[in-house]
Image (cartoon, rainbow, N blue to C red):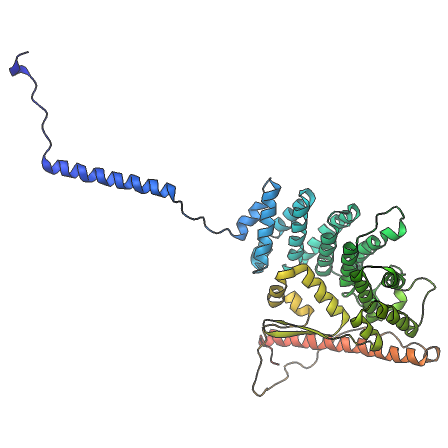
Length: 423
């Protein structure tokens, strides 16, 4: 091929085309650099929601379920999440049961706490009753095995208190606890309960007793309770056990149905029992209960919630408060502020409006009534002067409690009509 036959050289790009290619190259380089930087500095993950924690209850690893349970409890201690709990009720209940049956000791305790919160927060009676029906046999079996006994007793108390539909259901749960309390008394080979477990059992039993009117108590189930608690008070060497036993005796007196708690053939007069128990409590320095047995007046208790005073004046309210505070811990104040069940229980409205001006009141109802049972007076001729005095005090206490219920009923009706409560 001659020089003349060589192919012509390729056309050279124009200067404007070169500039366009350089700019395109720089853009590609910058884009690549941005991509690299995005890989090195990932965006922060969005905060998890209670829904994502609920999904965590389906994880196979126990540690993941523990983390999810703890996170859900943390959320419910800061806000109640009524709607979400109602909508996903079955998931929370049965995944909680799954964790209790399969999990570690820590997972079991967290699951029991979650189920207890569920019973307290859920508003629909049929759903709360389902919690009671599902948990009662499970917790009864767990008590026999001795697994996480303190938390099982706490959960049983909460679930039965809020989930039972009548006094018979309540007393079925009380009977489970009572048999557990007396198990180490009836079987010499049975391992004795530790002080912490015994205190938890007594407190759970008392918490449930506060919700049953004295006349509804079964006649034969609680025979010997006074003797049992008196013996604990005299012979047990743990201070907290003695305090729990003394509070049990005070509450039993407040029910006004002593005959249902004596052992067979051991019934004594009110005055004899009062003096016996007072001497025992003085020896154990249980001062508040000593004051109660001096005049049958419970020392007042109050605490502040949302800037309002919650005042209690009976043993049953004090025991309810102690038990709920122990179970809820840091979540107690939120529950009292936002949970209507607890507000009705303590007859307390933390959101009431205080009217500093002159109050104008116009009755909006003609008649409100409440039913209660007042047993017949015992034959005065068979009572000592002291017993007659105590009977009068006790009957007045029953009437006062009925009056309180009447006023509470009136208040709730007024709140529904006005949505505000004036002091």
